Image 1 (tube, rainbow, N blue to C red):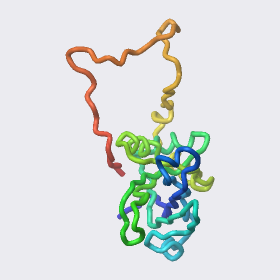
Image 2: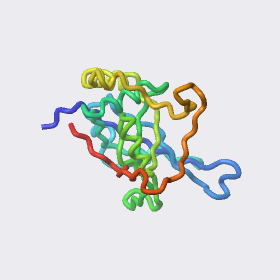
Image 3: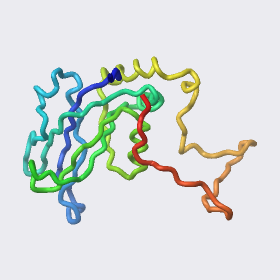
Image 4: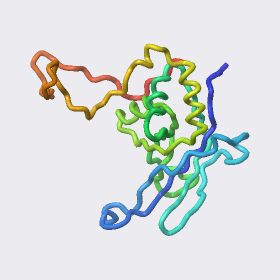
Length: 200
């Protein structure tokens, strides 16, 4: 039986007209508009189960995609910490361009996963997926932080977010550089970046 904390949410994607000179190459673009519904029970009674267009004008369309479950996993407490300590904690949404003949005669942006984990977003980006983010409301951030505080071990709390943009220095404090050229005899092997599962 599943005892993991979870929220039911819906994703709103926006199709908007591309302004200016860029429209010569691309007339429309899709972006994440919002993640909604975490405070509604029952969820299906409000949003239904099928995607639908909420609004359509000459310059934009808003499409609602219901039925997403956001779960919190004990083994990903650090991923929630990395999200909660950013200036704007957020929802991460993975979406793909797909055909939905039942609702549209055009290829459209279809969300497939929603998460609060910084690690999930990193794995999706490593797999070259489309990942967008929107701010999470304070009550969701508080819910995530409560879970994180309960399940993140003390050793992990002492770890620090990598600072990718900090200048490298040697042990004497002088500027240092790292060569990206491969050396003979082998190098670092590539890892599998796609969709690693959670434990519990």
